[in-house]
Image (cartoon, rainbow, N blue to C red; front, side):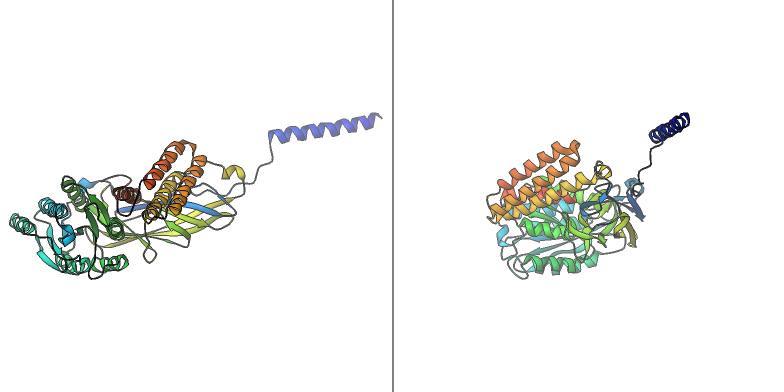
Length: 452
């Protein structure tokens, strides 16, 4: 009996010891998959980092935002001023009669006065036909006086043959092209093309053919200018689209364009995502898989947001690659870099519930702007139910992201309300409300994160 009790006591003691050991030394959980951080690479004057919107991906896959940050060398004072090769395409068609032609003349004056003797300028004017008003020349004091006199003589007449103007501008751009010079094309027009090639797709193809490597910035004249065409031209050719409501904004607009151009470090900047299922590059149109990003001035940072469809998987996996190509602004030499996009898959609910990265909020804002732009076009066309459905989708994006990132909830919901009100204010095609919203969504994708 005593032996039995002794054995039982030993067994109980062993169980107790095992329980204490389990408390003091718990059985380790399976190690979570390695979590990738930001992936960074560098080429010449630009560095590139990539980041997903979440730290861990569900093994079933799903949608995710990919944030691509591009940063130029940060010391503009260390670089010499880069001369500019500028071509101004000036609309003097019959639709430009009155205040619109006055604004176009103001634009030409502002550009001529902003250029230096090291820069070159050509002006092409067009109506039903285009002609070279001033051939590409160094902008000396004498040349500037000739340009200003020629501008005064412009008269509005004829149709709007924008395609002929592009074809006349191309040789002038080539004439002024040289190593170390930045090629810039400026279009001052109402964009109401009605002769020659007049469809949007055809004009976009023509601009791409005639101005390879140059940026094309547009200045919309008059409240009835075609913002969709002018914005698409600027977006495709890496420039900026502006609506010119008053002459006071023109000198500052050209100073900004030329200051950026003279401090340029990278031109013809392109990004391509390979090996990943892309839902949409937010705010950009891909051409042959490549997205054209505006040229970079020293110290400038830009961001491209991509919505991906992530496949199912396990552990650490490569989701795709981001390829960057550009030309050095000083030497013209080509540079290239490739960053790998990795994701860490897990079935652990705790890891999946971790706070998202900053790409979740920036991606949501970019998608909301993209949906607002689509809603604006539908509202213009009188398809109000479809426009409302797009607004509902963008509100859903804000709500989902607000749940994941509570600190950003208030600004996200405020942005959703603003977009909804701005879409509702559109009462027809080409109105002021539509132009304002499209400008806002254009800048949301293409405005620098910092610098210039």
